[in-house]
Image 1 (cartoon, rainbow, N blue to C red):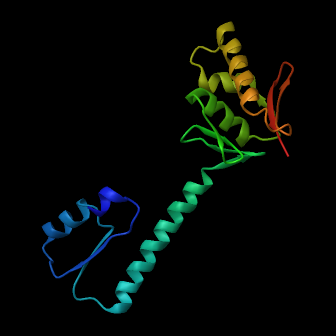
Image 2 (image 1 turned 90 degrees about the vertical axis):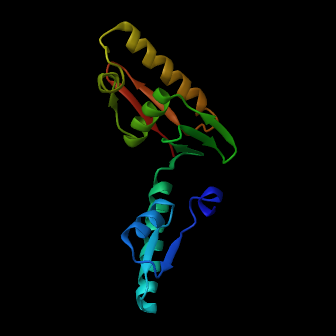
Image 3 (image 1 turned 120 degrees about the vertical axis):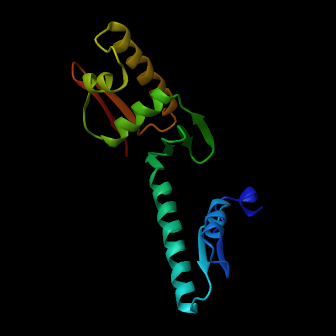
Length: 164
């Protein structure tokens, strides 16, 4: 019932049931830890600390997946672009991929050929190049509320994302 309400609540089972099948059932039903009696208070404390360290590391990793672009935050896994914590825009998969690539290379030129090679199967066509231009135009429009953000077209070379 706890897992139905909230999957993030840590659950530790302490029990005298030492049957391996009980351990498996306990963990399969959602417990984070299954500690068999008898244990010392120090051992239980060590398990709790280890569990919370794992949870904290997981939360830090999730937070690190939230990227800043000027006054925007960007969550690539959710494809979510948020302006000032309120105005939300769900990007298409391709928009999100291109923005993430440009962001990872902030202030550096990303070659058009590299973008096309990465995201288009048949990129040696005029369609693919025009399609990339459309995606860049859309991204510029999405990011327009923050004037410090620019996606610059470097003639015959590539694109560069920059912001304060």
